[in-house]
Length: 217
Ligand code: DX5
Ligand code: ZN
Image 1 (cartoon, rainbow, N blue to C red):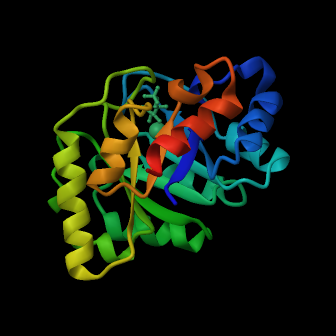
Image 2: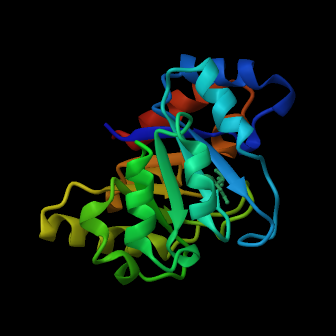
């Protein structure tokens, strides 16, 4: 079963508890929280209080996606809130150190790759990761179109993981909808993250189910 993550970036911030409930009713596998610092990406989103708040209202795992210049600064502040923490390979000089820091805070480490970043950048750390987050849009905004050459990247990464015999998961983030979801899964995705295809829809519960059905063919 492919995991479905609901990115709250497109949720109604005035009614967050209800938005969480709706996705829970669709049996979403995790919530994805996009944290941006205005430096690593040209946008600001939400602060650290949001994952802590979500943790207090749901038992569904929380996945924090750090789009920040210095992830090491924020990892300790996510203890007790994040079940998974994704940081960008482009933002850490010392990937092994950052991965260890996440593990020390009892979260599962995920390394995110911008669309143009080669998979070779995570080759040697791959075995130590819970997952790789393949960005299929340039990070910073929801509602962008899926970058098609990323299908090849997912496929190459899957082959590498299978050849080495690792159990590292592939998560795909950006431009996921009913059309791109099956393509990403066919190429090797284990988890799909969507903001607009879930929270941009009138019926959130149905949107999660539709996405799951399109991904598990
Ligand atoms: C982009 C974020 C994504 C975003 C996805 O920087 O990392 O998680 O919320 O939005 P959609 O699904 O609308 O492309
Ligand atoms: Zn994200």
